[in-house]
Length: 438
Image 1 (tube, rainbow, N blue to C red):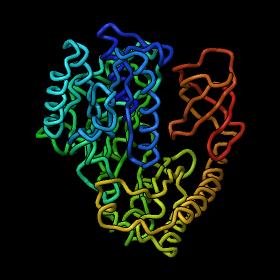
Image 2: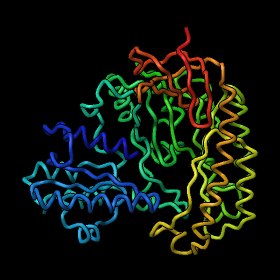
Image 3: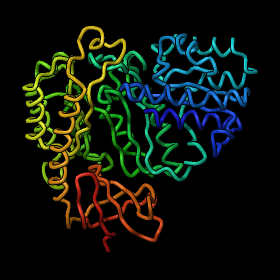
């Protein structure tokens, strides 16, 4: 989501006549787009902001804009006091306050009025305010895969999650605005789009009319120039039969789903306020595999897991370990619990799992998933798969299969944006290597 937001800001600044600076000390405007989903990300943002203070002291005309989840959608007075050298504070996904500052004579009072207006409307406006009609110049006709936000914010409010407090309530963008953006991206050379939402499969449920996510995928299927369509992140409670049908029936929609389980114990899931049981999740995985195919190539499923949630016992962690070993999912994004200020878990639950124990549990799951992913990927060895190539890295072309497997190929030709058959010659847990098929 932050990648998409940053592209939107860069494109808006270019429309004002700006261009990307090669170095920080050459910039007239610096935008710091922030994430605070984990404490480490928030700490990194604070550290980076402090590193900019000498630049501001050296060049008082430099405009520094703090944007994103660190600012949030409620208030930012505490940040103004802590970082008085920051000129503009912007809510997530909204370049409006920065543009107001740059176009209204650098009037702080006018900019603050615009920011407050944006904050007031964040829970009411269902849009980003504008369609991304042009990518930033550096990415125009070069970017192969682009992110398109379709649902902003979230109203589910898992007890550990800070997103509803920082990005506001769930707001679906109108389908016509999304499709205008998709068509524009395709016209600029983008071959793959990923629809984004904190709970992407809830798309459209807050709109009085229009398609759901399955319907949106069917509209995107008709866009000329697109090769692939992805979506993330799904919630187990909202993956419908019609959505699985769309994935199964639409050639451009890839067979890859991100479906976080977060824990393998029912009491921990209840404390997280996830809204499903372990058995519910197990049945869902079986349904997905039955509808979309199990085995090579079939469907790939990624999940998220948090270790060390407040009160998680060794026995409860073991159930998570056993579930991951049983389901044998393609990818597991692992995180150690960190309390986020203002969330239910931070206010009402003691962070009672020691840091070293969180790390031990993290490593155990990491080792298990490395083994599982390695065994899954071995099924690709000697097989021919379609790879959409994105960029060249250290002399090799990097691309992905429909199931989101990372593949590297050595080739002298320019493969950017091409979808080509590749025979897999080596398979590891995190990536594969191959050669172009003749």
